[in-house]
Image (cartoon, rainbow, N blue to C red; front, side, top):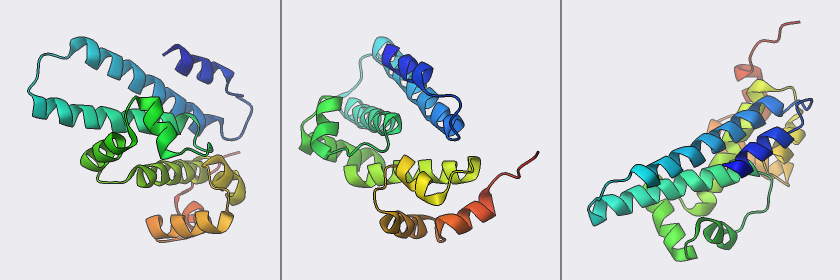
Length: 165
């Protein structure tokens, strides 16, 4: 929780992407607090319920990690270490709770951030791609088109909030 608060405090408020990044950091903070509360208040459960709850908690922790540093070159091994699991356990839990591979979850989070940035900021498409963790603009555009059925530019034109002066 302290690390989450420090990241929020250290975020430069004068940057165009501050608001969506602040939302991501606040979501991460809330996730950390809720996970801590869940651990404190968790009653004895059956093994099956516990396994499903563990998998869902793992997915929440992964989403928070990726949200904290979406542009980082995350590896599955590093993510597994960060959540305290073996790689195979991580893959199994993510597949069970989210129906995705770990890589698929990472792509999902990055595309969600990109969509928020396109809607809520005036950053250029290449800057959005970089902020969301895409090194190659062409791959970003192709992944975005597969997910949303349109290019990032068209998505912005259709979904961006009206600008007032």
